[in-house]
Image 1 (cartoon, one colour):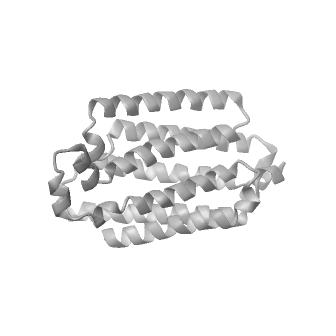
Image 2: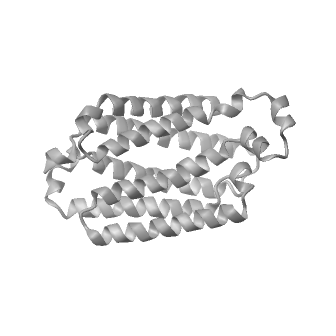
Length: 236
């Protein structure tokens, strides 16, 4: 199951990134260009995170017990830093660029500062967890709250504006809706990681299947939105 997950997830991530590159000319003068850069970064992260499968066990054993050994044997640190932290910060920045309401910008700004502090404090005091453990649940929940808040506030602004008439042509409508659904589904799955056993094949299979479904849904939705939608500057 893990092999299928990696293949299909990497495939849709690369597809979304390539679509962003091919449609970049349409969005180069709009805030959406930052979302294209983000998709390219996610695809690169997925490719780079495959590095443990190319490292021989003897080489890892040679560096076992050192910081270099921790980095070599697991890619958890990449996802913790560049997805849980980096992804959350990106969506915080991206939606603040698109908010019209100054109060909404301040709310997200304060939540972002609190999230950064919680992430930094936890991993400064539990540094080894960055390499050898799943994301700390409170940090993961805080990440979900931050992203969900960004999405909900944007959708509220959209519903209260004239743009609601043609929301289906707005790429930010699809981005906010899809990531809200993704985070609301993925966060409970991460919560149950605390209680599953490595030999619980049924749970592991279900976990991979759910992640596969929501990842494919998310990146195919982004691909569709990049092709179908128009830049915000053309909506005004």
